[in-house]
Length: 155
Length: 83
Image 1 (cartoon, each protein chain N blue to C red):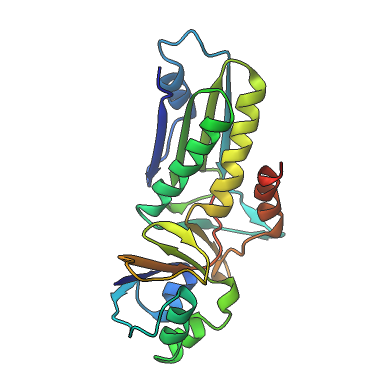
Image 2: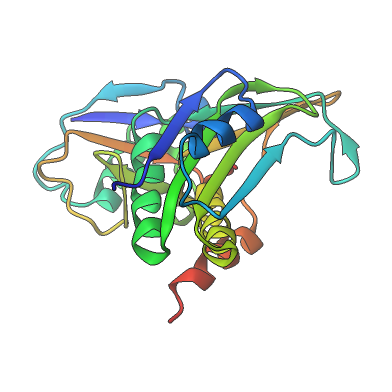
């Protein structure tokens, strides 16, 4: 059967338990589901932040995540995957991103989830702006995120 | 062709998108950055460090030496910080 893939870019929050239930509903071939949630922190580099505002490139954000979902499916034996990324204003403690990967055994699910998150961070067109008492500033990209994504291209 | 700007590139230029008609001598993404930068100070400021600017043609990442002929939509933005 075809692997169910859900990719959504949305302003609204998501419910992790509900998304996991949707992924596994009626299935008896799935033996492992890995769930990663990215959550807005209340502090960054020692300073308190009031909120993050995420800007995205509609159309390309979906396309870029779809490309990496296809790569993940060709690389690991997955039974399903879900990627949800929010945009707009997100306050500390609230969800930003969800990656779910389902497979027969845990290793494929763990690895594919990590692969997808590494590429969501470095190649999906989203930009974070931090809001704090000092005003707003754009978050700078981190070299270690690029290094994390680059390790998947090594043979 | 349509050109879109995101995050601080958008803020510096002061617009999210526009339609441009560069001359035929503007062949690559890098040429387009130079041509836009020569328009006025806001573009020059947005593109002051061209090496860190990322570009996409028709929703796919491209390198700065990519030809722009046939592109419907070109986007310029800083390195991504989602996730």
